[in-house]
Image (cartoon, rainbow, N blue to C red):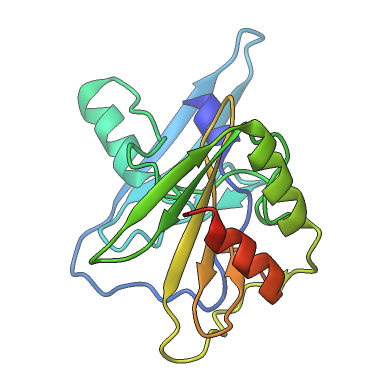
Length: 201
């Protein structure tokens, strides 16, 4: 559990994020962690159908939703893995994504075509993961503010895998909307867009 918590991105939700309005009653959880030196730390979170929940230890906070996992652990006394089973699922985010489009250390890459009618995916090893992440990271970024034009849809998702902890997802959008990782966005020049598309061939 502590390993999973330490891999969550320490950042607030983007200001443009809209919470759903599902009628539900949130259930709050307070987690007490004891250490061998006698010290104690606390983490607060909640289970909420809308998933608009801040998880915090008082000094750091994240909007990556873990209420479902905490609720399951409370009921079963077992901590579930936070890593997604779907290779095209970006998961709950990875620490560092608020500062860099792709955090360092990726050992693999899955490229997914996001299509309801003809989805595809291809998996690559560490060399390709490092090459593509370097090209993405070299692009200037800005804070993600949900500024995609009307009608833009996700087209390709890049899932960077690591030896430990969750993946880091980057989404490529249509209509010239560029790429984002839910915290940062960047423009994609035509040459890079063509290279990313070629990874599916």
